[in-house]
Image (cartoon, rainbow over the protein chains, first blue to last red):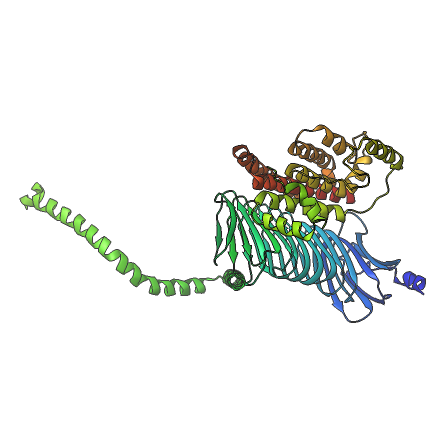
Length: 364
Length: 222
């Protein structure tokens, strides 16, 4: 039956500029996608079918086939340089995904299977995932939310952001921040060279947590009642906590060990240039909320300025000029009047004296 | 710096201490940063070793191993009973070197495959770092050699990558190099600082991993 299916599924979505194909897949089938440039968007749905929509342009083509138990989707170009192709694929929710690209943004939503996504120049944004989830980008931010299992996320030149994750976590970037929020894990290993690292999540008895940066601050939430031995080390920064800490040992100012409760979990925090901050979870959640609000406001400001630019005309300029003149004139008058009054008074008094004493004047 | 507990850490990790020893060691760990740092590294090494895939040896090594074991057994001192498992202890530098070596060995497959396709004969990943590791005197020296090998491979392979990617990779390697330089300068002033040693090792490991990733990526595009 699957042989027939495989033959029927060999679909080349070309030469149309866009095309759709939908087909049933065997239980437990996985998906493998390779797209050189463009986008790979994958949604999960409750049906046992796969739907492939491709925006191929004139030269691009999309090949869909079934190899073993894997649906394989490849893109290519009928001639010349590789084409930019946008793929939107809908799959059974539990399908395992292997997605790769070079100049490709990868977005996954609503899938509860294992996910492997790798791109060179592109963002990766995944919501969902269960089991082994590995996301890698060189030049692009990586965002993962609502996943569980064994998580490994890497970027090189951008930020990495994980939220609402359950499981074993390994995160790394070189030139970017690492943000871990809403984490439920007994094993976390996160690091960067240039950037801050933030961890807000559980500290499980017997767990292991390692967070490090070279040029950035490490900020960690420590829940009340946690049983953890924290070793905090920094070469050029400070170590600070917003709650009392029972210090167990310390080597100088820059390396300290704190045992909280039974101390069964191990937490290693290290930053060469940055500070190490220990906070209560709510403090960190508030900080993250503020950061998101600021970010949203900044985005809105950008939108507003874009709108202003889009509708730039003389009437608007006149309106703004009138509004600001009205608003600022009294302020400027108040601020500058005394200064200019004194200055003019001095100048005029000198001139007046000069007039009084000059021969020409006296001759009149 | 070593104390009476440093040599027992591997037993602790393997769960071979009795409850009294374990409790005593845990109390010691709470007050000894050196042992705590060493333990962390040991755990990393164990975790990395566990994540390695099993591979068949190229030839049957057992006859040589058996011969060595027989010789060792013959040399045992009277106080040492045959069959008692030997305890291994590790210094911090040994652990760091082992950690980085595992990174190299566990991830060099694609790079090795790529290198072996080069027309000019080149030392392979499997043999070159191993032979050099035995020759070099310090773990930083060994890691420098490994990094140099990976960088040479990257120079040969980067034509498979687009220029934007190469530029980004170089920028990030430069960022790591600055971090390594910072750590080295700090270590010159305070050579015995366990934290600085650890930080330097971690930063060098990052460089190894980045180089390995990029080489793997280049291999995938060949």
